[in-house]
Image 1 (cartoon, rainbow, N blue to C red):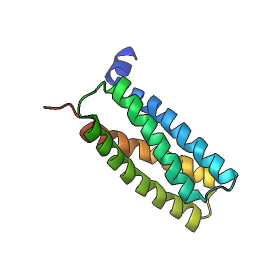
Image 2: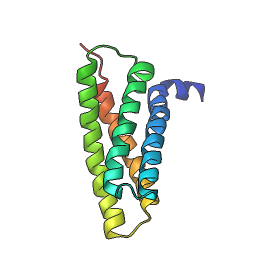
Image 3: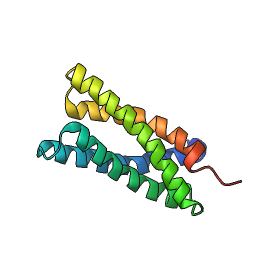
Image 4: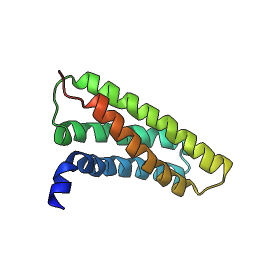
Length: 131
């Protein structure tokens, strides 16, 4: 088990950090939707941006331990996040708008898919070690 955890350390730490970003995202989303300050799509966009910024900061510093080319890395991280947000928005539209799924359950389901997509893209693009 220890060997497995060491081999998967980067992914596991990415998930823990992602959980903090997703928690900020989901908390912001819930607050904004519950108080009716924003509709679910606008709340999704704002929550997503806040969670993404937190995730980048923590991943760059503690997980991938990279301090070079931060502007490029941040831009590519947000590019990957934007792609994830598009997928998230489409899933929310489909689940909530078309099928009438609960807004909170739909958001949670979309987060599972987005974590897998974004980890692989960020590992290959945003946090790739410079040659």
